[in-house]
Length: 74
Image (cartoon, rainbow, N blue to C red; front, side, top):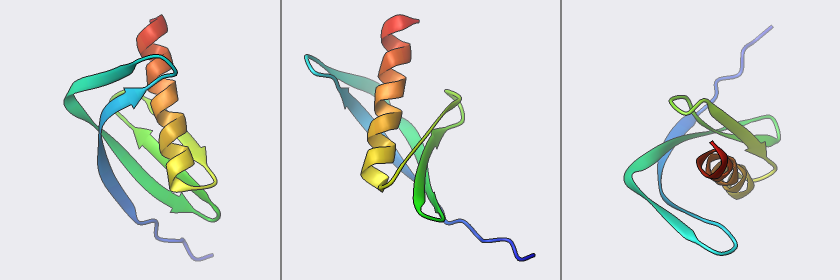
């Protein structure tokens, strides 16, 4: 069985928008993006957050919303 090599890249996230507010980070939140088969994955190991989507944009948006959820409720 041959392992598939996954290309990973890191992108900075400086702000997260909700329906009513925009939250800006003092330091960029580093998001690692990679694709496996037909899904894109977005993660931040330091925050222990991992999300996925059918497109890169959907994966990043879902990750941002997940980070915002933790920020608002914990």
